[in-house]
Image (tube, rainbow, N blue to C red):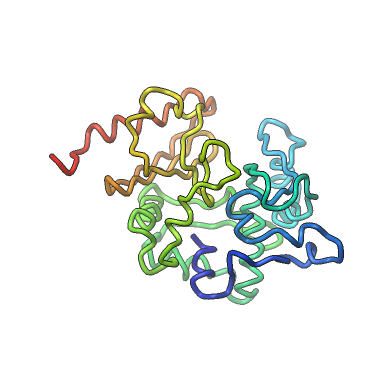
Length: 260
């Protein structure tokens, strides 16, 4: 959403390439990574998303490097840009760094609040930067359930006047490279099997539902057709112990439909 505010202001474009100085050296294939590739998790950058491995890229990024975004941006390509989908939280932090360059050093610290949190009334949201001063968009945005619901409601209403008119539709359009149409542009369009996506209850969830899925079972689900936003901030260390599909199906059953 924050990237969307910069697209709306004309400071970024989806087709922009050569997004970082370290990618712009002669013969560096990372120069071909477009902003849309990052939003759709198809940058082609090598990045291991294994939280149980202390030597994986994601744990090193979050706990072993003062510049999380810089570390993620330093990864080499393992596939040509735009050709392969692979979820990477490092990609989200690269987007934070690109936003920092677009906004400017003076305005960047207050930019998330001015651009998004204050207009939505997210008064308790706290966005933590890394030691280099770049917001850790992958992991360190803390907010109450009500504030997350306000953010979800922005998308349930199609982005209102804060985002480009087509931004919500863009975010929920399946990425062609993502298996089974499960991912859009920084939104999950289907629940994983670990969250009940292959259970019978998943068939009771309207097809326009989409999700932000956090670590260990934190979930934000938006269902525009039902004018519904569901937030779950519980902790499930064993993610298979939480059936988000069943939870959503029960919530939907408890609420009246338009026909009612």
